[in-house]
Image 1 (cartoon, helix red, strand yellow):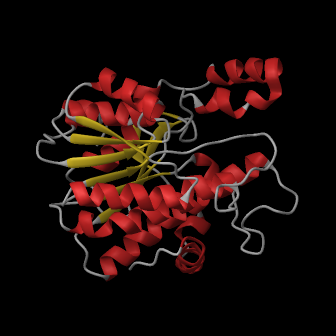
Image 2 (spheres, rainbow, N blue to C red):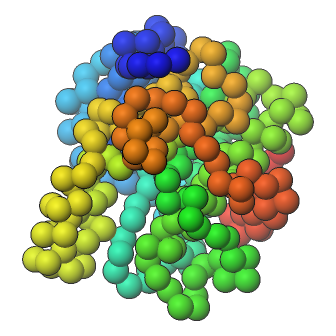
Length: 301
């Protein structure tokens, strides 16, 4: 489908969509487009003040709820309160993520911060909301991958990067884990006969607040590097299109992966993207799933 744009998003009236990290960047654009087409959008954000500001900007039918993906207690509390208030969830967009290029940091549960936030938090959230998703009509889960997953490798002997920590590698590893999770989720949903489908997308090189935040530990030099990096990125409205298509295109099948078509999948129109060999490996998927269940205590499918 050449030239897919947000104008192709069908009517979302009557649908409840949860978008993590919806107060800025790709999440804000995604939440805005969904609300514009009539969805009730739950902005799942760590900073509720920023979320409230985003909700006012978005307009439409929105609500703001606190979710810190770096804390399993927060994930459980969010899921429990959401489930109590919403009998069905039609769409879960696991958009939130971080990239920090400074020293190694950990989540509230002791996980390496990139892996814990970008993948394990979303793994737990998806499992805790699965019954609400399965109660909906044509439900869907969207995972946000990255082109960095293609050069990453999961070292199950050092998944938390405790040896020889390198921030860029840890980020790539977390995005590979996110991608493996989305693919394995689709396998398990199909095997279980679930109505939920799992899809994936990546934004290529896109202009968001993650780039300046990634370099904030370097002070003035970091700000210069961040500004230079922004020159080669595409607008966030374009970068959000792959995940919007993954979330709303009626013809999408479980397991499909979307990204930009141009310049090594860094920019341009939406097309089907290519998974790395490791991301598509069922053995890797099974192993990561078992580890994620053990680490989060959330078991499903």
